[in-house]
Image 1 (tube, one colour):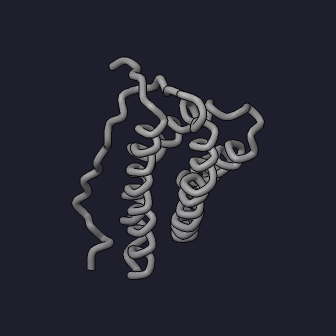
Image 2: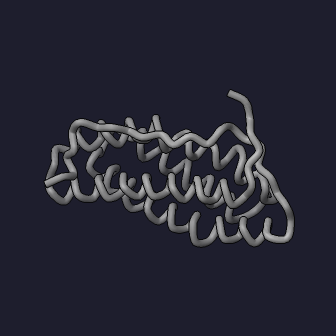
Amino acid sequence: MGNQIFECSQVMDFLKNEHHVIFELCYRIRVGLYQKVQTKRIKIYADLFYHEYLKPHFELEEQYIFSVFEKDNLLVKRAVSEHRKLKRLFENGDNIEGSLSLIEEVLEKHLRFEEHVLFTSLMEKTESKKILFIMPELNETLIEWPDKFWVN
């Protein structure tokens, strides 16, 4: 599977679709915690989601998307810092309920920042130029999970 060439609008559409799926994770964690679902069940799902979906998403952004900006761009620095914070939260095994609550909160704020600030800046930066992204094929990953703890 080699690299392909994508226009900025294609990449943005793909990332927004992925963000929609990630917002679903936030919702599911929130509902699970609200309904007092056993935190272990939520954590198992969140960990799988992180390793199979979110971690590759962060890597794609950091390796290919953020490279359009200057190396010292404050928006990119913030996004990467938030990626690291989320990684630590997912890997924290001490206070699972607290970590899940923070994951839901931090991740949702992070997605809104990327969509409303960072990606807007990217679109403005590429608007006058024809920037193409050379990156791996954009495939949607779906995670089927039998324990739908978020459904009442």
